[in-house]
Image 1 (tube, rainbow, N blue to C red):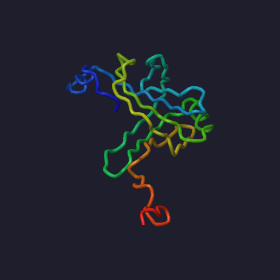
Image 2: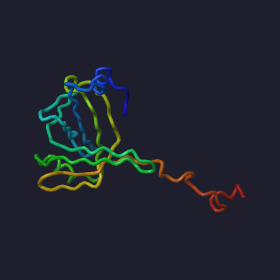
Image 3: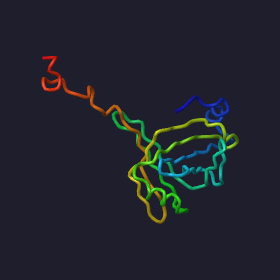
Image 4: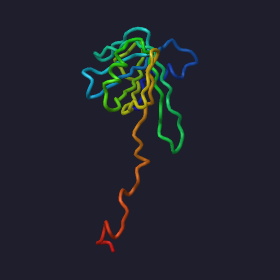
Length: 157
């Protein structure tokens, strides 16, 4: 998460009932795309910081908080427009996905953002586009990167 949430958001989150609505803004980006694909969880188009987010129904299943497992979320976007499928077909590598949460009344103020997700294992049909959101897991990298052996480090022996 990028920063602390505003006091208005905290009040809404802690309240037993609230009239506050929160929106999820998704940005799919790749060097091959001429413009990023931006979608909102709202049923109408949302403008945030000068960017227009199209109203595409989608489902975002957030990752579990488990030890020793890389976070993996699942994204399912309704295939109501061929724009997303056409973009996915042309990409040679995984696109980056940015997730932002905003208040509906103040869409220019990002309350939380999650960056550096990669959309992998993408599949699609006539009804939906589905993929797994992953973050590169540096904890799985071997450390140290090399083995200290006589053939690699003769000065140590």
